[in-house]
Length: 411
Image 1 (cartoon, one colour):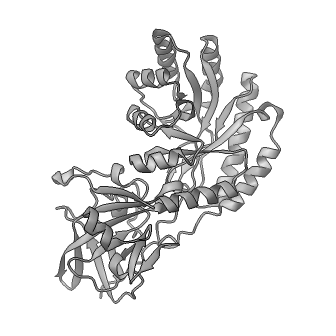
Image 2 (cartoon, helix red, strand yellow):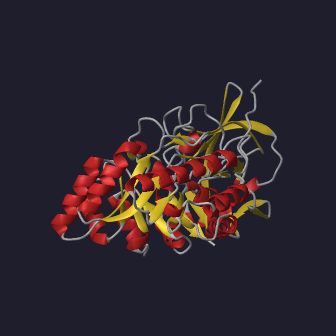
Image 3 (cartoon, one colour):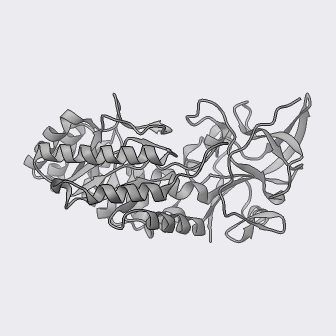
């Protein structure tokens, strides 16, 4: 007997129209008929609602930034530019896309190890803030600024001496390719100030995809303490401190929504007790998947239904080349099921156990494993939820020559 495995929790708020999943007021089948399959559908209404919820929970003075690596699809990015206080980029290509989306250069910050000289030049000429990751990168930025005759805007990305407990990806603590170790920060700031650069402050990012409010609260407290300690060593107040992000979303069975009200209340208390050296500092958090992840659904049509030794496989026209994370091949150690449903039978009771697989010639191409679903046939549509972040651009679209999925933004 095949043992059924649970799927992750479907994000609340999705509607049903005539027994079908509806996104932005449109039935999934209608969207696929009009735009084709496979299809990423992003909801502007859900983006607006998430941002409003976050604004209500966080301190009024806190700036909210969008880490566009989560989803750089131009209509989504342009929409987010109108909602947030800043855009965080990680490449020259993302800089170009952010400017095309009409993000103001002074509201863009550029992080990431291994920035090429041409990327540094583009950023300096555009007037964006560069989060410097090493003494060598600092030297290159200063040299390039001098060569192009423009004062670079530089912040120091700090490798903190702590990490975010329970985070899916640890970005700080121990030896890391990200940021400067603490003892290197003050000398780097002195060098860039002596060279006439504009020092913007610190970027301190300890981890990502955390669902524990207590862990995030503890990390933010440590981050504020570290920023104060560094500022006192330097003898100067930073204009800006990016506290990182780390807010996660539920993907898997047993995951629960992050309590952002608790996080916001604690951060308000912390910001009310700042030491004098941080009293004039502007603070920000940067979020990616938390802002856009639950606003996206991946729709893929069933092209075959087959049995093998008593096991039912629903074979779709999509797969890991579009949704690598849902296949369990994007950093997870143990494969678990993303939230999924038969879109045109949304809400129907499950009556069989099936595995949803893609069209690629590899056993890794499995979107749901031994999941309980209502009986589905060729032509039905599978919906994979939490597809708004790290989907289309974080997956090997050209593997086996398959090509990219279609993407749309709906109301």
